[in-house]
Amino acid sequence: MSSDILTARKGPVLEITLNRPEIGNAASDAMAIELTKLLLGAGESSEIVVLRGAGEDFCVGRSSCGGVTTWCSTATAPSGAAKFP
Image (tube, rainbow, N blue to C red):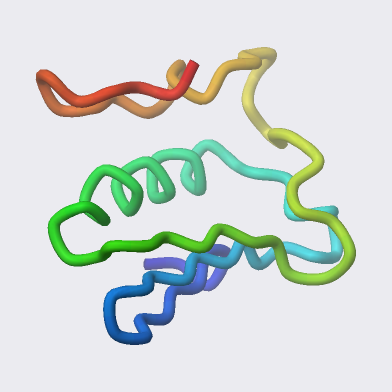
């Protein structure tokens, strides 16, 4: 896992923090894939997921995405799993 996404577990709670405050937590393609994997796997071991952004912004959008504007363009979910819109 990269330092661009931090995780912490507190009992049944999984905390996920987008950690690029210097650019408003803009998500890269790698972050979108990593976040998708974390969220899809969270239900197996977590009752609650807290998603936050470091610093003042939650997430200003995507960066370095080659003109692609949707999360699901770079992240593929396993068969039967929900994808981000």
